[in-house]
Amino acid sequence: CVYCEDNEAPDIEHIFPKKIFPEKAFLWGNYVLACKICNTTYKSDNFEVFNPPNSAVRFDVKPPRKQYLQPPNDDALFINQLIEDPMYFIELDLVNQEFIFIENTENFPEGSREYLKAKYTIELLGLNRRRRLVR
Image (cartoon, rainbow, N blue to C red; front, side, top):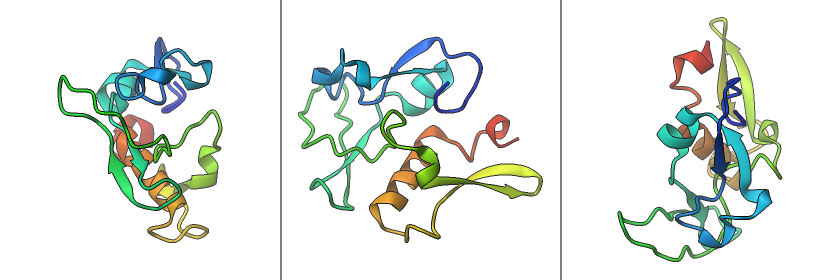
């Protein structure tokens, strides 16, 4: 799995959810392999962008159930592992003999775009809440 590194990754995951960004549904650059837990339980169709683009203002683009609303842009808050190195945004910190994902606050102050991308990705994928991943 591209997100949690589980050996089983049978799902084709759309980085930009196809329900929200149908124009990206068949783009090869929008596909990664993910496990069922990351794809359906955690990420699913949850997605936020920065709006206005290039700002540090979060905007949730997940539409209400059974509705389609055109997102204002595709300036993703979620780290796109195909074009961005997650380790640029997120560090592994050894605490109590466990690896914990932490936001890179040394290089990116709280509230910066990079900090918000790291925090959102960690929260969305539950990287610090899933005991198996932390262990």
